[in-house]
Structure formats: structure tokens, C-alpha cells
Length: 388
Image (cartoon, rainbow, N blue to C red; front, side):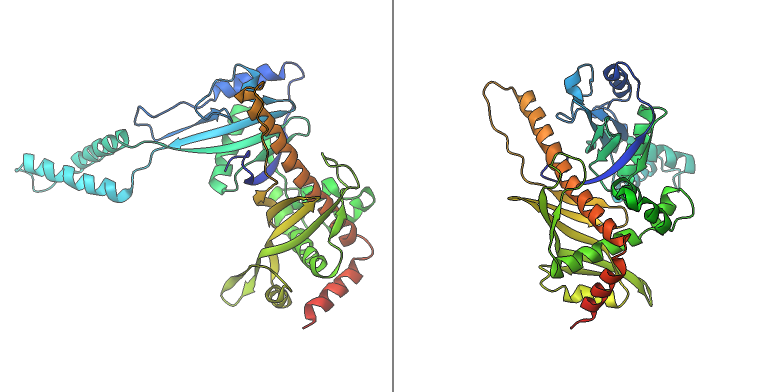
């Protein structure tokens, strides 16, 4: 689903590179146009990838600001059209073509290898000409002020394709995934930065090492929230920058679904606990047996509004990120393009408030995890897990 949908799965990257100091619009426009989408509907090409408008995936002209410019945001959509022929269908038509060849050439007992390849190419071309390409769209928003790009997909193949086309389009730039340790460095209280660095279990600055060696961040964070959901106040305060005012109260708790993983006799074991978690009985038992929470549904409430996130603990990806619904107020004086732009800004505001609350929650956790009170907190958590 697109980034303007009320429910979307997102991950974030830092954009590394130096933007031009003058005429940013012209620079971006030229690069998007040069790498824009080219339709393949009328041919037999199997794949086409390029940029289109977020508001209209048929448009790939970027000559005017409305095409992608949104204040300090660049609204980008990568379109991929692919033709595919089922292998069974290709084999069936190949057999028919070979049978027709032998019928027309009775002197052959079998189809020669070279002829078989020619027939296969001809059959493939014929089927491709009759097959419509299937489009896939990947929305992204690049905040040129903060240097953060938010991408609306979590599939590994789509992430690779987007990163590759982004680097091709914006030469000299690269995307670096924002992972839990990176996010921790951004939100941890200043007085605890040295404690965070001491807790870093990675031996290099490589992203993969920082992710794999610091999985404790996700494990301890989710275990801490689960405990506080049932035993402590679930109210927190906004303490990170963003659209919401500093000090605003919000509520955070886990419910609905959790995934736990751990080593077993036959490799990694996965347990999924679904439905309302009244006392987290199944989860508590799994934790006592050495499992770790790797994914959970996090609810964030501020005032009358609810945000809901399926948090992937390893990378802090937000799956099924549901925000309050965007309400469009019709105004006869505003055209369709103006309404779409208004929806975009409202949608970004809601996404950023949700992320701001999440970062504030994570910062609160880090204050406990890296501070002097963590040993006592762990004692209480372990006692609660052991209680029947």
C-alpha cells in the first residue's frame, strides 16, 4: 500500500551525499526525468523501472514542482512493470511448436537442438506480446532537511531495487538503513551516550555488525514494554523533536500479537501469540524458556487518536503502521491537485507524530536500560515472569 494509505509498512534510511547549494529543484527534476519510467505496454520487453508521480503513476514528467516538490519533502514513486510467463504455459506452447515442426518436416525423428532454441525464442516472444505487464509501485518521501528517506515497502527484493535505482538516479548518493543502534544514538539522552557506546557489542561500524551484535536493543525494549503494559503506568511524555509538543502525554502498550524466537533442538523455534493478551501467559512462559520477543504490535494513544505498529525488533521496521484516518475537507475553491497536496501534508504529519512518540518511548527505555536503575528493573521483570 502507498505511503498515503492509512495503513502502510515503512523503513527509513539516511541519505548520504551533498545536495547542491543552489537550484535544488532543477537538479532533482533533471535526474528524475533522466531515469523516469518508460511504458512497455505495446512491446515485448519484460521489465521497465523508473520514477513516476506519486499522485498519478502514469505520469513521468518532472518539469514542474507539483510533480514531486512538497516544501522540504521530495515525494518519489518508483514504478516497476514486469511481464512474466508461467513456466508450465511456456512448456506447453513449446511442445505444440515442436509437434507442428515435426509434422511439417517428416524427415526428422526429433527437433534439432538449434531449431528447438529458435522455437523457444519464438514461442516466448509470442506469449510476451500477448501478456500485459504487471505494475508495482514503491512510494518514498525524502526529507531534504533531515536527510531521512522513508520508503513504503519491507520486501527485500523491492528494497534492493529501490536502492539500486536511487543510486543510479542520484549519483554520488547512497542510502544507509536506520537500525536500532543508529536510532538509539539519535535519541539517547546526552548524559548516557558514553554508556550506550560501552554497551555496543559490535566490533566494527558495518551496518550488519551493528544490527546483529546489538539485537539486545530490540529484545530488551520489547520485554520492558510488555512488563510495563501489565505492571506499571503506560503513560509517557513526548521528549523528542517533531510535530507534537514537548511534554505532551501519550500511552504506549503491547497487545494483539507477538512473535518470539529462540534456539531449539531442531534449529530456531518460532512462537506466535495472537489475540488479546490479558496476562501474557503464553509469552511469559516462552520468555522463561529462553525465547526473545522479535516482533510485537505496539499501540500508541494520544488524546482520542490511536496509532498501531507491528514493530520488527531486529531493524525497527514499522509493518502495518496504522495512523488516524486522514480527513479530507472538500472545498470548492481548491482543485483536485490542491486537495491531494493537503492529504500528503496531513499524512506526513500523522506519520511523524507516530514516529515521534515511538522515539520518545525508545528514549525513555534507554534512560532506564543504560541508567543505574536497570538492575532493579530486571529483578522486577524476572520476578513477574516467574510468578504464576
